[in-house]
Image (cartoon, rainbow, N blue to C red; front, top):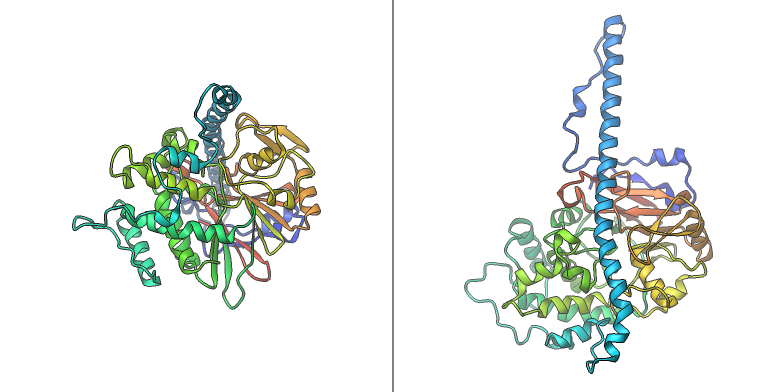
Length: 469
């Protein structure tokens, strides 16, 4: 992430096109899609020469054309990738909607009582304990062949830094499954205690150099995540992190990102919070990476002792169901993975009351089901009102009037969401008259888009910056 981020005009309220231009983002993709170096076009040394003026004009024209071409290619790649990604999700949601309709009939004719909407029921069916205090105790300890990092309890900052350094240099050597189970065993009770409703209330740390860093989708891209920590500081009493969902799937290191986040949270309980995204979901995780999932395969490859050993996977799933659907920062910044809702009367108090301790429903008939579904799956649109979305069955898009009403009714300054790569191919986009921001942290998404990633940084005075890489 660039250290030269710009002040975001969204946070103070409405934004004009002129204000949008003032956001000093350094859009520098990690892997540029254009092969034309921008520094090849230089201004001539002698401005008073007619020949040099002519060459300068040509150079400026070429430079403008190259910049326009690069911008067009980047936007095209973003649009293409979003279309492919939404195609994967469309198939998943269509299949899920059909299954949801026939499940009552299947259950009526079956003696089995397993509730597939609960990770705990799925865990029990797979022979995995639902008591986190037992996790890891029956697993073998690392033997002499293990070359990964060791977790020592009680946990220390030095130990966490050892793990982070290992992941930075040797991420292909996974943390031992017993250690992963022990980390989750201690993290689950902490989240149960802290997150009482489906909206988590978070402050901004106070004091000199204190800040809150908000991250969008990381999708298993460990290098991006570690870059964010390096440039913004590791979680601590003065540097807090809010992850806006979709930590896992597609990329190969979702478990490593989660392990690092949870280790820091065990050290500094208030310094890390994770919102739930649509990819913190058992059925999507079970899909192949090329079909939009990958986390199941990742966990089984790294942590399963046998082909049927799903213990760590279902421990993660039980943890995912504890994550809040949204986080309210300092009563003014509303951070949610997908977006807003099909029912115009939905307020923050309604979201708080939703039962999140289950898998995300794929039907939206019941009001609470629709709120939970929209929180993870909805997208913005330029037109007013609510419309159906091409993302998949039951998905909606919401307009600027929906956003402005939600902001006004809940006394907010800004809604921050993630869930998709902005069409501009940047990691950050401001829309809906300055009341909605889309944040995406994974750069060069899946190694094929060349996009910029970004994080939001806010301080106790609620001055918001956007840092782009």
